[in-house]
Image 1 (spheres, rainbow, N blue to C red):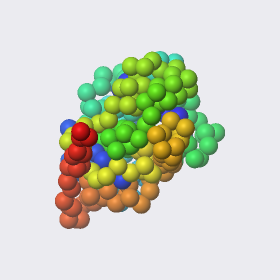
Image 2 (cartoon, helix red, strand yellow):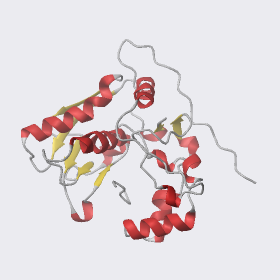
Image 3 (cartoon, helix red, strand yellow):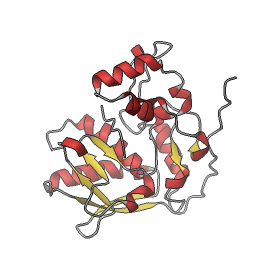
Image 4 (cartoon, helix red, strand yellow):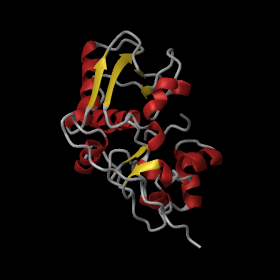
Length: 233
């Protein structure tokens, strides 16, 4: 599971959005992995460009996206969101793919690299949309993540139980099957039904990013703020 407490049908964070002109970012690797691994990671990052004006290109000079494979305190799979990467010190990674090698299963490149690249493009964790958070049983959720991730109650509440403010998003209704959504077991859901999560960029993800970052020559589609949810009385 690629949760990392700290540093999200899909949505984009307004304040971290790259803009309708698209995304063209340079990528560097901080621990000098072999050329075939660098190429493979970049191919999966650029999968987002199938329908959108998105391009990632490797460079060794002042890369904007900096990838490490660190463990320990900086370990796990994570990325800063959208334009936040521009504010990270140049000697620090903006994305981490702990222990990735050419022997890593292909399914992990689809699930993890494409997910973390989604963060770089400005997409938050979909499971933190209010419509999905409201389905969680609080007590069971606290126990589950304290047991499986060794998180404190404060970390679980911050990373799982506190929904993103819908007014900060451009998007539509929460999509439990998109690439930006984690798998959540039915055992901690109020209705006992799991959130299935996404293991690859799906058709709705591709359709949304085509609107957010339209290809050159395409007419930009109108995008709206995610609908505000009515508070329960």
